Image (tube, rainbow, N blue to C red; front, top):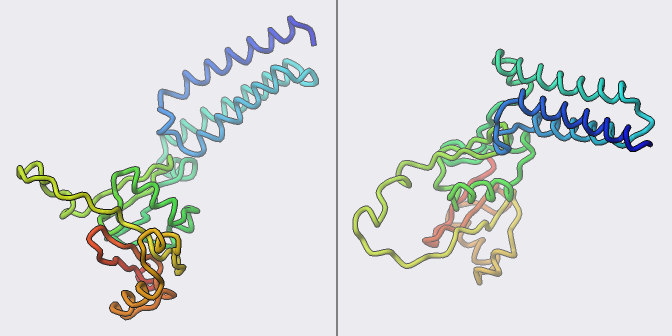
Length: 227
């Protein structure tokens, strides 16, 4: 492939990508939906292939690149003008936790597991499911969290109280009916202790979807029938 042809292809790809990024708006990367992310990668891949693939003529490459760009712009226009179209193209928020209970079916629809949910909650400064009133997974993959009202009251600093001794973080002991032995070992407790604690709530670990040891030593339990 001659140097001038490569330069022409590169210039053409650069101009088209510049125009497309300007037309698509000024969304931050954190605001992009999965659809936006995938189409962006595809347009970039087409542009790269157009630049170096000598079997692809300039006309064919430009047509493909412009076609993807126009379809992306059309999808953005539809989602901007139509609520139904926006749901189809971008998706809609999904409630994962309601009234402090994890919604298992919703998590499965979103392909989210307990570890993913715990990580997203920690990123929102929530270290226990028990503190959450609502958790909503947004179309861009971020988690919006509404804490329970009793968790949003005044702080010790607001009341001019001395800081209390730092306690341990909440830890998952049962996830999806399975005991997390790694956490039991780190907490220096055994399965017999856990089963005894569950017995006080009249459940076995097979009946428990999620169990979490709180900072104060209490055990938060959610049964399968509650999801």
